[in-house]
Amino acid sequence: MGMLQDFICPACGLEGHVSGGEDCGMLAATTTIYCETCETLQDALVVKNLLSTPPRRYKPRCEQSKSHPIKIWNRSENCPRCGQAILKVAENGVETMWD
Image (cartoon, rainbow, N blue to C red; front, top):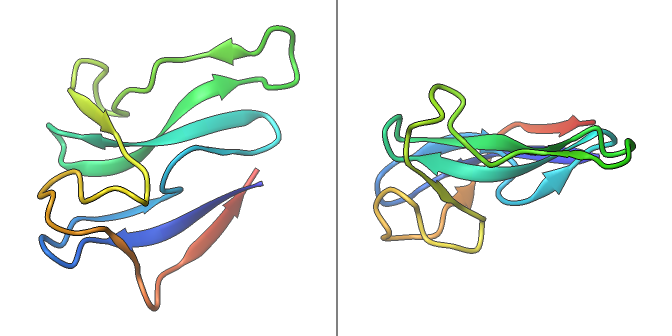
């Protein structure tokens, strides 16, 4: 089961409700990306139908346009927008379990 959390950068205010890296549920796997055009954090689908043989794999891309440049991001790295700080889990943020 995957989990989404509210992340926020204390330096520039970038926010996102994402996994914060690689994550998976019963049938799909995701990775967190930063879209440089949209300036948003997103969880991109990387594997679908985990139970099928072989599972279907995807290149991570922006949900708005596959031509947007992206960066793979995880919670242990500095903010992908400003590079100034590590994003924090919002104190009163929402946690979402997904499958």
